[in-house]
Image 1 (spheres, one colour):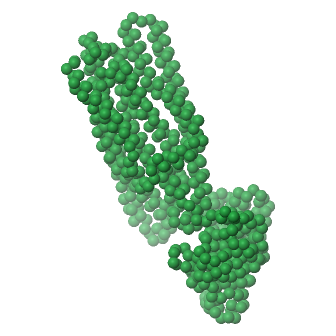
Image 2 (cartoon, helix red, strand yellow):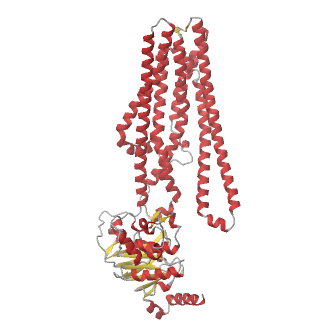
Image 3 (tube, one colour):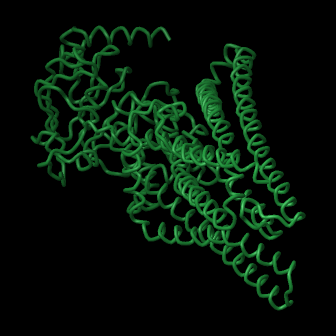
Length: 626
């Protein structure tokens, strides 16, 4: 068999270099691996930032590494024990010797299983703790962003970052990195063990490595493309579902169900085709690697059988039945890690891409932050003053132009004007949802930019046109986890704002279930609950923005009565298109194109016969016609 030596020697050298190239190729940086996402961060930077979350769990990772080494040791030692048992069976042996070998093998197997169990449990705990920390930090960071920043980022994107992308990062710690390290150690360990056992048979196995390298390179190219198409198709169908489920009422109103079904079927078909392509790529790669594995086994059996039957040495290396059995086990342990390395690295890059998306959100600096010398505002009288305030959402498009007015503590001020005149903007600026470009906004004579944001906002209560209710109960939506508010307090404020009229008719009263966004309550009922929520937290300043719009007549009477009571509680700022709602206000400010054109009481403005007079008469005549 020495005539085969030159071919085996050359093939093994090529195979050894191919193996080194394969590992380097798989682990080398490739920006295109960021599937479906443009990578702007370096992998090293992403890993450094992830290590911040992994640092508290260093001891656990060391434990996993040690346990993993025991598991690898079993995979490497087990074939040697089997070889020894096989060789003893062939020669003279005693049953006790074999039993000792079997006991050693069984003991190592049990230890390996225990180590594998410990590794899995520890890694899962680490992964869940890390992903929990990332989610908490990410959610906290999102809450710190200003309204304008949140408006620029779709809700679906933020939800995906907090849920799906953090799950990908969890898999990175619990599965991907550990398996990459384990597979690399396994390949090296198995290769060393085979060389020590019979280096000439090892050279034969290495001859198959160049083919593995070729198949892996081809697989990596096509799998990346297939994976990207699946990810793009999944994203596309999620966007379609999110938009159309939210707009289902419009779809049904205009009878567009069939058209939308056709659109959905087309997107679903594309996703299905991408999935099939991905399955096809993996379906080709794995059988090809398996074919090489079987081919190497056949070569081993041929050479081993020939050497064993003819009682020959193969190129100076003794071949026994034990050697053949051990190599049979080693070849499987050699090929499997190589096969999974490419697949694991695809998942690694996808996880790093998800981590980058998360850190992209983290890198958004909050626009509205506390100044270094910001103060706590313990109590508020309720004086509000605007001094030459200029504000713009978009550069060079001023929404407010030199607005100045003052509202004394306990007064009710109403803002009137056409759409886009700046009414709602004024209410948003007082709570510092946005920062002004010029001028000053004062609360009790203090510039709001010199007050801590949380301290400022706790003195405000807002009642908006679009009332948002959380899933839970009526009580939970009123107290908002403020344990200092008792059931008696809740019922008292409900009576105060006339919400008890419908709450008492509910089967469960304050514990009645509130479904998503409060869709099991009418618009008027939701508005009354928002009034109760504000009153329960006893704000010094109340903001009411179009709270009476789109309300039925009966509910409007209840709301009007509630408003008259609430006007006596503290300072109130309100916007309402129905001028009958604001005629009892202490001050009415009329806006046009971001400027104040007149202000005064209801009677004063009617007497002036200006813009307010025209608006009031127009609305009065409409109501008379109705």
